[in-house]
Image 1 (cartoon, rainbow, N blue to C red):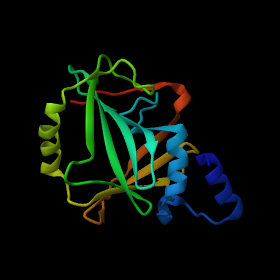
Image 2 (image 1 turned 180 degrees about the vertical axis):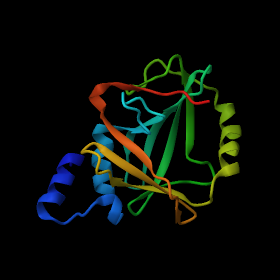
Image 3 (image 1 turned 90 degrees about the vertical axis):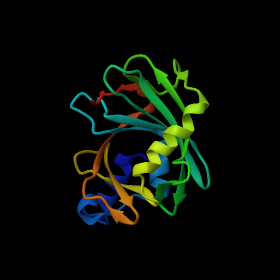
Image 4 (image 1 turned 135 degrees about the vertical axis):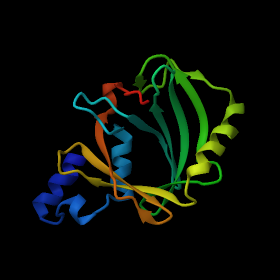
Length: 188
């Protein structure tokens, strides 16, 4: 069900007060509906360029596969593939391997949703990257989503570290997959 329809249904039935204020998290089914048709653009600017972006390429009973892109100035953009596990309505990152399965790089700072034009990075670098991620990772790292009242295509991601919710929320713009890609804003 598209997010606009979820919000409209809630409003029409007067069942859903402000999702953020009430912390009414989206269900797994609602999130999966979004994953099928939308890219998740985190911390978008006014031109809908993203600090990082995610597309979900496979949905299973117990996990999802996501591809995420991020960039650092003067370096190729990286795209990583992760396996995240469902725990109820939350997506969780497995501590042991951080869910990391593969890595690529691309020239430029545009994340193409068809994943074409990527150069695979050697599998030998995965253990080092996993260890680097584990150094700062909590043992229990999960996240959920709420609707952002800013608009029908906006969410907040809520991060939980060892069962405690971070105060800061990540704003997410939903970009239709048919848009074919988004710009990634390099950091640093």
